[in-house]
Amino acid sequence: MPSFELSEEHQVLSDTVREFAEEVVAPVAAQHDAEHSFPYKVVEQMAEMGLFGLPFPEEYGGMGGDYFALALALEQLARVDQSVAITLEAGVSLGAMPIYRFGTEEQKQRWLPPLASGTALAGFGLTESEAGSDAGGTKTTARLEDGQWVINGSKEFITNSGTDITSLVTVTAVTGTTENPDGSVRKHISTIIVPSGTPGFTVEKAYNKVGWNASDTHPLALADVRVPQENLLGAEGRGFANFLQILDEGRIAIAALATGAAQGCVDEALRYANERMAFGTTIGSNQSISFKIARMQTRAHNARLAYYDAAARMLAGKPFKTQAAMAKLVAGEAAMDNARDATQVFGGYGFINEFPVARHYRDSKILEIGEGTTEVQLMLIARELGL
Image (tube, rainbow, N blue to C red; front, top):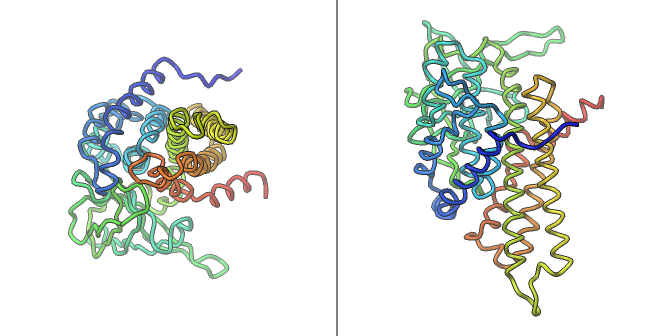
């Protein structure tokens, strides 16, 4: 029978990151959230632990682990601070992983070591004002001119794009078109590495977000940005297909993050229910509260099983696209539902931002939107069913 028990190595990693999250991340999470400040010192310590290099080979500065190790770390971090967790998730699965999966050996040797060490961050510039779930709506263009790509366009909601340690953003751009037999036009979408500080590449003012306030997120503008022809990442015209592969993997990571958020809400609600007195007894002794927390724990457990299964399939070389979509769907909804229920358990205190459940309430909604909306996951699952 299949077992979902962690190996000794994975269990040690999970316990280590949990301890780090509780002792280092949690005490400063509320302050960074309130100040909308990026947690550089926390990220530096995460880098020293090797978290940014977990799934990469040692030859590129990584830890020689696997994608499941990354997922376990994300779950433990997200229990106490989703902003820190998404900084790691986006830095690895969206920032560094495309270079590892599709880069030339020269590109890997140049860009991966600092990303895997956590001394640098990278972003992935896919989303535009009219191109998110419909990536085919990309309007950013890139043309070859004298051995350089000349890029023009804009990007929205790009994580890790404007920190002091951001080294590059990989952007999707239309590099050509083909007319189909029916007269419609098919865009050739490619991915191109744009180093930070390149002339014409502007990181615009950070968003004032509802949640994930300690995560770095900006719109980007590209005006006649010129980078060498060899900055093309992967084959020309394969950028969209390659990114879909990255998203499939990333959904496992996001599901792990969402599972951590769901479990964090359980932890907080359970602690409060055992402390808060009302009508001469703890509120946890009331069936309405105990049943609510029992449902919360069940959601977190189911979400964990879903992402464990998807990760196991991925690492075994089996198809996992649908399982990743289901994990992302289940975990994202679990995080949002648990955040709502935990806030209810806390009553008025759940509406005060200094309490972790209030932060989870604001943070969790994006888990039903980012890296593939709930509706996109349902579409993928339905498609697999032949609908």
